[in-house]
Length: 200
Image (cartoon, rainbow, N blue to C red; front, side, top):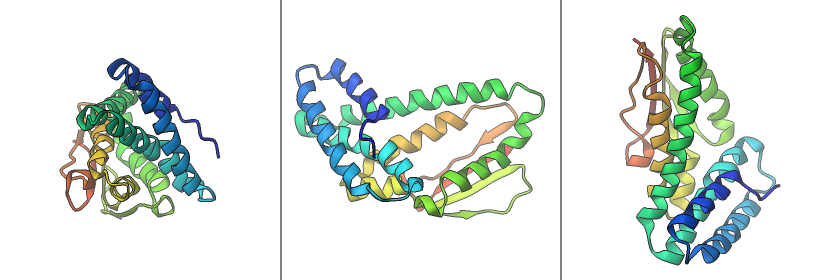
């Protein structure tokens, strides 16, 4: 299993600007923690590790390293949240270009439902309730999420919100004919994460 990770590299690059005097120790600790986390995941299916190794653990390793070396929890969170906000905004911009094609917006709820089933299904460690719709609405309630479970197990459940926030940025303003209607997330203390994308 490869232990280099583009998210961790991006977070460390940002930390140089904010914590220049602490950077060397932050980098050393973050890389060491990430390596430990990766070893725990060895042998697990790629459906699991695509979330844990590639997304969750680099953030937790960085978060814990910054807090340990600087004590600045809020600043550590903002760096991670900022990374995912920027990434989500770029994704949304690409989707908006595609949605300029006539009537493509009609298919987005159905496509989103299929993507969630594939990437965020039971084999990846998620549990969800899928509401029956007419195809013009994607309505899924995520009852169990490895992002929340893993962050909680590592003592930083508050970090989950940084992952949740990016959904609002990615889907909140895709097209005038589409509405994003999220009301709850596990990361913000609710009983589920609701994914509701609707053709108006």
